[in-house]
Amino acid sequence: MFSKETYIARRKKLASSIESGILVFLGNNESPCNYPDNTYIFRQDSTFLYYFGLDLPHLAAAIDIDSGGEIIFGDDVDIDDIIWMGPQKSIADQAASVGVGKTYPFARLNAFVADALAKGRTVHYIPQYRADNLILMSDILGTQPAAVNSGARVDLIKAIVAQRLIKEPCEIAEIDRACDLGYAMHYTAMTLMKPGMIEQEVVGAMEGVVISGGYMTSFPTILSQHGETLHNHLHDKVLEVGKLCVIDAGAEIASHYCSDFTRTLPVGGKFDSRQKDIYTIVSTANSFAAEMARPGITYREVHLAASRLMLQGLKNVGLVKGDIDEALALGVQGLFMPHGLGHNMGLDVHDMENLGENYVGYDPGQERAKQLGLGSLRMARKLVPGHVITDEPGIYFIPALIEQWKAEGKFTDFVNYAALEGYYDFGGIRLEDDILITASGCRRLGQKRLPITVEEVEAAMAS
Image (spheres, rainbow, N blue to C red):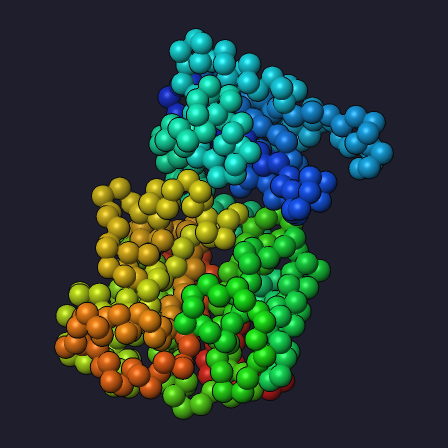
């Protein structure tokens, strides 16, 4: 938790962006795993954390724009809770620690909102992504759950996005810490991975690093020798010499700020010549994108420039042909990288995407492309200092996709389908760093960059 003044300033700035009415924020509740008293690890809603800082279940908050009043709704523990949990600070004391002077029991929330609605006041809220809060908000508003998110206020969404997109120095320090833990997590895999191990053994060691030094993983770990499947969460395969293993994993520290790195490792510790060729194309694109990222350029431009570089590299090895600029304009690169170059990151590993991906990742007037790959770009905005984004180019050989394009006769002037048949067993390569846009360019987050060149990776795996 940051200083009380930090949260006061954040709420004041948000309130100044909304003309009138009340703002309502729902915190998260504990979520049952397989019966009510056995819950998943608690994770507070990130917007609630950002403005109110209290990392406890069953809380809500309101800001009255017209009067300037602020309220936290929550219940003090009773003796039954104390038996199991021990003594706890009162809701009033906890609210005071983040600069909120008024508290009500949680049950007062419905009446508070009902009173505002009866007076014709506007109730501002953001979309709900958990079923229990969706139902609660429907009860509060007197509407059907299916209608709740369509009534979320766009003015509030845009105000929150504008504020949270630009990371404060205290946030950047936390993200650096999360990246340091992410470094330790990935470096463990580099030095541990050996042929004959089960993928899950490596996953367990990596996640143990995070749990020992942080809060939890920032998303379910991706570790797979089938890197052509972008989000493969199966970890049951035996590690085989000659395979490439994509590891996309991140750490979330106690403050809930995240990291998100990807490395692709050769099982056995050495790349073969074919793997080196493709790997070097991707690692060059990763570094090129970081060199290009700076204030004033859009991340869409960076995505396209990195894509062009990779198409040229694929042409150099005989998998792509024809005019590269024409191929880029047509979207040929989507066959090899069917995802965007990166996304925003912070309190959420995909920061604020619960508020709407287009609000978060696109400037007014920017339209999402329909091309495969470019259409999945989550961050296309003009870059400004304070943006924290991922830089994650990749090249994948997805047999089903290649066969579909081939059957459709798609881009035959640019794709060497005959040569691609020899890559159906290749898998995929993705390389991801986290970067902060600065006044003059960008810097990678965390104290050290994970090994990324062929030589660095092989040396780390030999240690």
